[in-house]
Image (cartoon, rainbow, N blue to C red):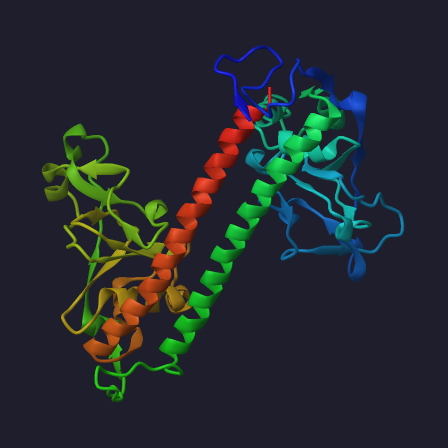
Length: 404
């Protein structure tokens, strides 16, 4: 490839060396057609009907079949190989424009009225343009004023810069190889997570047991209440109208920030004054930050001292409990928290209810072995996830540089 340092109109920055000359802009309506989807009512849904592709069937620019709807009908427009399936209407504007390329094995399926098909002989090239920032910006610009949608007439007006057929094929083949690598990497991560889940269940059901350093069995596990192995500490929010309570040096987490195994830096911080004048409390390093309001059962391990808002009941384990062991138990047994929640406005589980939950606890040596073993799988998942992120960043860069 050659890399042109200065971008010229209708010439990409990054190009295969055997190609030159400007690209020609064309409207989608000039080189292809829009095919509308099937309109149906709830009464038409039947288990023995035709599969109808909807927005939920498009995940990461591929077809997914975990959430299917079947409709009783004999009249519909079936998808064909190389069609691009596009979400054109949705309750969330962020989902408008997402798309997937139809392959040979999925030919003949129907698609719903909130979806459209773009059909042309250039689709293997266009599918990659449909992943560019330019495409997403045009979609956003053409969203309806009152509903989240783009219509067929708008799609037809989208302008796409086109190279020669030979260059299209070269670009499409190259970017498809990268997509395949990304899909493979995503599958690796998914399978590792399935493996982790299966092994964790077997460990906590004691179907799989570790042995001590001499090869001997560990003692039997004992039933303990969480309140007997942890201190449970709630959170609080300083008065938002007082600036002196905020922008200090104390980490202060909200439930929306609990998205990974470990957390260290919060989006907002509170001051010493804010701490003293609220119900927020300092939690030591290693505390389990457990969400207990609305979204119940999300958990993360604090890598440093911190505080939380009132949407948490955080667990500080005692000397007889390994925090990573308990973290994995909580992840596996989220339902135990959810079923104890109550509240008329939003579900919430109280400190007293958490304290009553029973857990089977091995001795500290076996807890440590279990924690280390499961952490080794987590580390492998993290490494593979970082690799996926790098691949996705590379793809994003290439899309920006290889299209006009």
